[in-house]
Length: 438
Image (cartoon, rainbow, N blue to C red; front, side, top):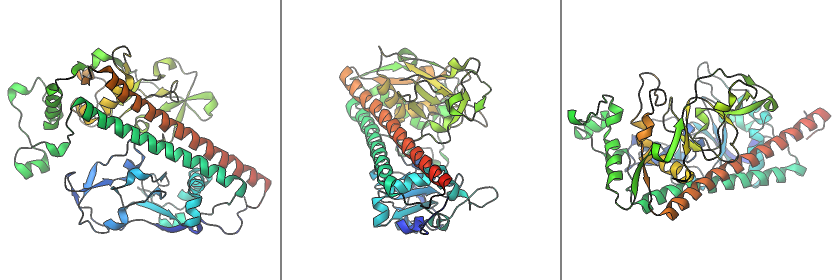
């Protein structure tokens, strides 16, 4: 391929940089600024897990504006994301490369983003990575990447990416709105870890020390089951008078398929996409593999629309509602399948409730295992998870509709983005094979 004019990513950028390597001063959610780690950037929904103090050095460079392109710098370098308005009031880890477009770059930011996500752009992004154990790339590696200018195609690709970007933003807003309704319509107070008290005051909070009476053990000696926030969740659920509590087994069936050997195939036409635990919380599933579609007993691993998939090994409790797009895909045995009884409960509502802290904490308290956390292979522990079901069916359906629409928009955005990137890749290959200068 011939690249004309010496055009580089730097020509479309006002600034390409990372934050300074400084000590992060972490604090609690009541006093700090929401802090997004690199892994948080690709989560659906966008939520911080840590907060930093306002006195943290170099903090001014950690804010990001819409239309900035973020690129992971280390670990798995080269993954790209376009910033939307939900990043407002949040800071991003300094270990993420920021590409701030100039005026020309801003007008073509969708095309720039798409190019960096093609296999050609990815190859350029990681070709200069360094490091023995943890791989890294630097801002100057990004700045010096050549970019083809294709007047006949740029605007079309740009508009498709911007459409996908808007749909992702709308999907995240819908999921946030559904969560807010769970609290406001059901009368549940918002809570987090900072709302519970630990034994020993501030010292106890640092090591999360707490007491449990022998009469409250309930044959469970693992600390996770007795965390104060778990007791707070159950207590708050039991205090709600206008709705009624159901156990998960009353409103849904569930199962975990057996372990299996995974015969992967390279040609997508010979296989079925396989969802793994890492894909469940992602805004777009990365590094999808395909499993041979003629594998023995493959029906046991196929998932269907409106099922809820929950990680039951490793990081517990991450979940997703299966949309039309994922209907017929396969999923690993490390994902619990929850099949809502649709006459009993709206699938979207059940997914929304389990995504809230009132569902997540209940999954966390069931964890067992010394090295790898588990909840799926020692009996149906999750059967007794409490679900608050509105007596007013219209509230349940309204919340459920928001959640279902959120996942459908997310997947529609991914389809549009994938089509745009594929179209660009095909065009670039054709140009290269023809030896044409661009």
